[in-house]
Length: 509
Picture 1 (cartoon, one colour):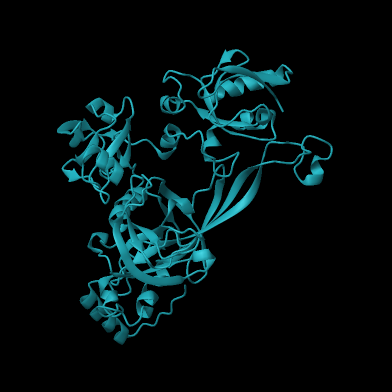
Picture 2 (cartoon, helix red, strand yellow):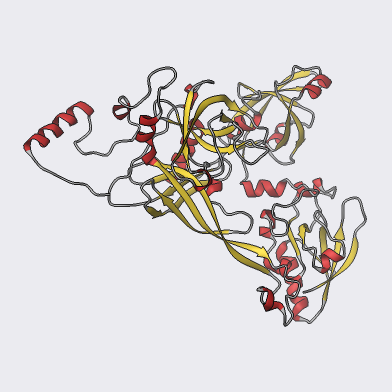
């Protein structure tokens, strides 16, 4: 950006007057949505006659975010390993190949020195992909290489940093707690890569719970059009404050149907501050599997619906189990806060400091009782994914999805399987004993001998070549040794849910 400077006594006097009026030194960069700037551009009370002035003031701080990724894909070349393999572009190997991919999203600048807020999923690669670079493009078309300062999967927030000699236009967070259903809002972003798109609407609901079970399943709902590419962009109120970060849509068609969700500023702002400062984000955790108190469930217990949450299972060794909570309990109040659809158990606990001792009121066999609980520390999203395993689910993208990242390339390239460690939680879900040892198959390449022999997701590998397997590294080591010794197959002992363990020879490829 270029600036022209002209120095005259009149300008100097004007600058002095400006300093006295605004409280800022002459020429200082202030927030685009500072109240001294907003008075002349905000629409009148009630239905605005136009959003043009408001948009013109705020749009310079909204940016486009793109990533360049390297994604691993499985080579399905039927002639791999033969003299004809190169004819199909797959080379001689039959292991994972890579391809380039891109993603697009939105964000906004929150400081003159170039800190940018967006969604974590905008700058995170899918599956086994790896982000090679992140680029931030400002409304004037200038591209800046961005550095990832910090990201948080649980809240789906990320902070980036861009730099230039001159200050950036920026905006500030507002107070989303003041938002009311029916308030006007505007969303600015880059849907489908169409930069600088502005949409308007109203707040349709506050503290909307979408039923995802997330620790931060509490959104502002809007009918302002939000589509793919709007993720990470700001939602503004009529005073120009960022009261939400556009995050997701509900759509059976893939496009906007008037139901969009934004992360409230009251949730986002403290997390952004911690990410910007490089601080760890610790959240509370009880270790329970819960479900809302539906009408039928409430009727079966003789309780009013939509008040409290039902405990389906308690994880051994975690805070809830230590406090004496049991499956079948109904939690109605946590640390003095009522558990409701708008204020879920997960939300209350996640926003409680780990190590804090809190009272939990619950109903058990029709009796109300209060127990004292020391809140634990919430595991990472990756650790939670390991604890929750659905053997009947299909991995995103098939062979090579997110959970397979831990399996290592040896198992995929040599046996055609992907696997994760067997934890006590997964063992319970698969009907095995909590002290069972092994690895769990998460995906099988249908073209491999493992696929031909009927191995499937949810099978537990107990041993290989008569050696017990306790980790991914154990199984990889046995496979490498077999190949070194010139063996053409590995003998696996497989435990399948509801069936006795059996030995299955799998040819090494």
